[in-house]
Image 1 (tube, rainbow, N blue to C red):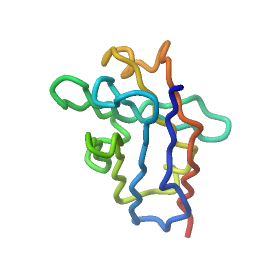
Image 2: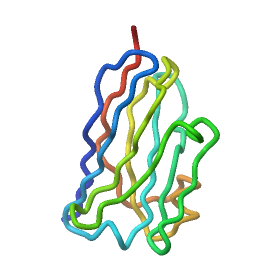
Image 3: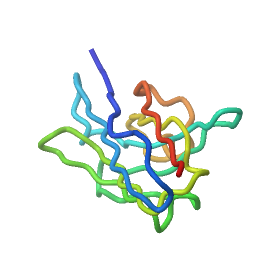
Length: 124
């Protein structure tokens, strides 16, 4: 059975950092494009970043560019999202998602596998 489990969320002060993890079971993450998304209360889901299964290339949305870094560890079957210089507007539930089409994951549509989410709160 396929599972994605996010962890690493929490409460952090503005300017702080967090590293989110997306651990997979039941399949090999390296064979899939993995994306990170977030949803704040009352707002639509927003795609942040995606890492390719083929060449490790990455996509970043404007809100993530320069502050967030996506990476994968094939041995641990885990994808990470390093988030630096966090701002109050980064407060949201963060999700990882996996599918075999990079462009599909970037677009955030028809993705087969989703985690349950982890809460990130940026507040002084």
